[in-house]
Length: 263
Image (cartoon, rainbow, N blue to C red; front, side):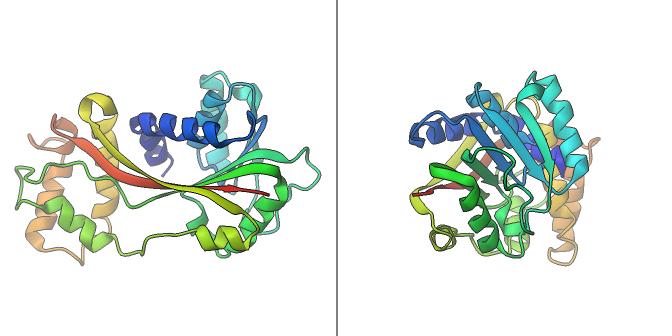
């Protein structure tokens, strides 16, 4: 999962740049203290540290392995002095009170839906923000699509059928939960991401490989045998039309961000 998240940030860097610029334009002042809520390996922490070079960033996550990975990445990027890690179960009462001034900006990307009680977590986030501070909540609609309609292996429409059988969760909406926690919702913006191979960069093939392998692991009992065989061929690194050998990949996906403000 850590590799998948890091590849996601590398390939979708144009989107992350656009998103953090948008957040900066909505903030009432330049954020000095930022919290990455449920940071994972810290791709959001690094993007925020890059966009706000004078800010300190707290990356909070339950996984010590993820936080250790972040610490190494922060050192590599030259921002270790501005990113601190906090090991915490954010699904429980937060061990954050009194640890410093309130935050100016909080970021929760693809995280709230993992919680048993998102409303409680949002209420705690509200208590840690200064008045006027922002909370940015981002969700992905589902895994990206990468292949052309006819991938040259199996029947056309293979990736669409894979998404149909594995994308079984309803769309996530956070407006009401945010308002119930006391926030005002300033904006809700879907980002339609469409990147060709030249814009996505050299990590695209590996990113597609990891994403499609993840979906393939959930498709055994849901797809026809010929579709499963075609997927296996595409995931075979020795196949001439395999994912990692292709030059016709692109990235198509949607990410939605809510900007909530503490009044």
